[in-house]
Amino acid sequence: MRSPTLDAVTDALRNVEDPIFQKPLGALGTLVEARLEDGRAWAKIRVSSPSEEVRQVLQRRAEEALEPMGIEFVELELEVNVPTREATSTDPIPEVRNVILVMSGKGGVGKSTVATNLALALRRLGTRVGLLDADIYGPSLPTMLGIEGQPTSKDGTRMQPLQRFGIKLMSIGFLLEDPKQAVIWRGPMLHGALQQFVGDVDWGALDYLIIDSPPGTGDVALTLAQKLRITGAIIVTTPQEVALQDVYKSVSMCRKLNIPILGVVENMSYFMDSAGVKHEIFGSGGGQKIAEFAEAPLFGQVPIDTLVREWGDQGTPIVQAAPASPAGQAFAGLADALAEKIATEHFKRSEGDAAPQGEGPKRLRILR
Image 1: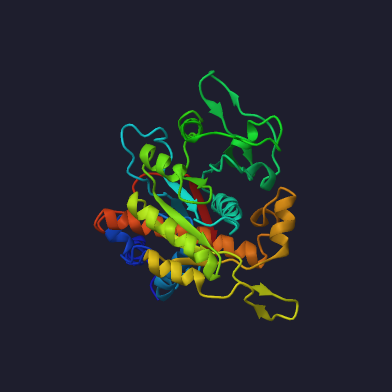
Image 2 (image 1 turned 90 degrees about the vertical axis):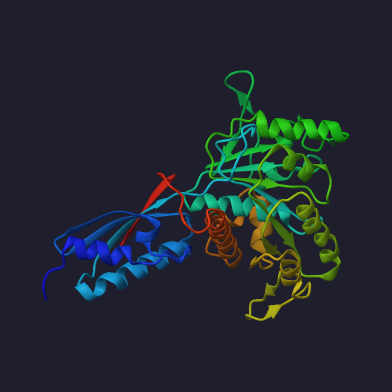
């Protein structure tokens, strides 16, 4: 067999199909570079999602494309370029590529747990992440992430967010002298605090800003929708019917505010006992009902796991403490699904002609 040429390797890789956009890399212009040395192929490919599934699929397809040439070793360097929202000229955080609201019309569904673990899962994919606790009356971020302290300012005008596990953080809880102190504010004060947490915090360049919204359909989503171009919302629910009645209202509010619903998460979906028997304590099918009503995908089902509560109480969420646990894997799958959905929606806006351009925040090497 003749030794493959670089041109042949490049042509084969150009025909590899992108798993998100379902078009060849050559047509998308995302095969950045290819090299061939001593029968070993190397390629740099630009991707629009940091998800693990995308990485694995691209690796497999590249290997399959080059296998007929007798090339068994492939080294891929993936250049992650997260798509960006279409921010206006008055947007207070233009360096933030995506703003994600984690919402539910119902309290007690684990929305803060989902928001926190989603942020950590996105960070573990190598992206730049911020987490804003917008629940002014019941902030839980300081406890869930085990962090104390007050924000400082370098210039006397903008606050520096606190950081933990590589995530930039802001919460009203950081500004209270007594964590048990009640915040008793009327609407205008709430509105002003949210404006400060967005515009007066030095978030810097982020790929994702996750906003943990309070329960209900009150002022928070309205204020944020007026001030920011929001990429979309994730709706959190539990399976039982009594939760769904309130969650439907959040979906309706998003529609009225023109906030795209990216996906739905069903939390506390089931409990798996030590014998491997699945117990649907709160019933089943609630997440799918909300997804159908919202005309959005069901991103995932998170099981009931005592480790989620134990590690959360200790200030280290399950994604950080036990990423291989069933709940940790469920949150990782949620991050993958969100990243892929954002990339797909961006591609639709460009009418299927262009993938995001430019160098992304991280390069990942896959070796075989």
